[in-house]
Image (cartoon, rainbow, N blue to C red; front, side, top):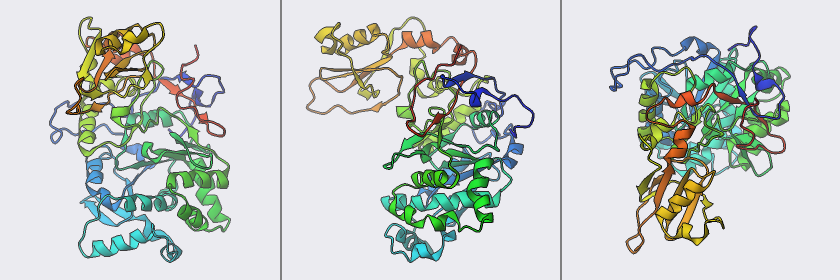
Length: 462
């Protein structure tokens, strides 16, 4: 992954298409021991620990996320032997892991600024000294923005020779094999700022923190090292007012990177997805695109995902957008020629009104009529029906259970998925879903200067 004398991938090649085919090797295949007992299987046995001298992983958490962070350390980041954990409170999370209070590295001007959000840090330390535990609250969320700049500086100071700096949160799930396959294609000496694009109030795109973001050695040198050699103050000092006035630390960081280095975010959505699993989108365009990150993953789901990832059937390709359906939506793996599968009292988050004029009002007369209309519509992969309202979905989404209201004579929401269409795309009980893709479709970055298009132009060039 150091970029020494290897073929340069199409990531850097100018093209009208974002997608490109590129064969990569597996860095972290599923464990050979496929026991379902997580305690007896060494899921880190094949982890490429030697890469951690080049890839620095930083886990950002908070005092109110104690249990979630421990769940993260037992699963997703359990193989990261030199992980840096930054928080708003110094505490021993496990015998092997200590969280560093990164806010304690800030100058005294923060505490004396009378900023009500930062005052939470002082109160929190006083309560912790009295033996009280912090809770996950809005005050803790508002305190979070103060961590970003000192976190970036601390990461570089602790491992200045790293080629890549990877920042994740306690409820972020990362597929490390996807990360290493992506980074092997890139030059760490180039100034890279990679992530999932979100626009802030100032029309500047920043990497959504929940999806994680990656900074290269080339960028960190310009952002931290060169500025220090020029005698400039630390970023957290120079931009204190901006941090205090903004709501979001990830947005502030993007602005600081742009101002200090001239580098804009390279949007690599949907590889950096950052979606909740229940809202995660898969369609024909995304089918063969690798998946790196999920967000808002509960402690329980994190354990289940980790167990599935480490014991799934081995495939040479990375985990793709379609691969995750084996875990999240096994009910779609229908044998035979079943056209649809349905769930009652379930909302699969279909969004488009399924009432095209050619189908008329019959579409909304019943759930079965809605299903028939979806089956006839070219782009419809799922539908939902409730109280005369038929909605189509052009992407496959899991959704969530919903309770019908007691006075609802027509019942709750009925959701269905077009299993025949999905089988044609490769989702079948009698076949390996990954075989539908000849190779993974990697994505060139969106240049986030005028507009970052979330899902456009994903098909690879022929």
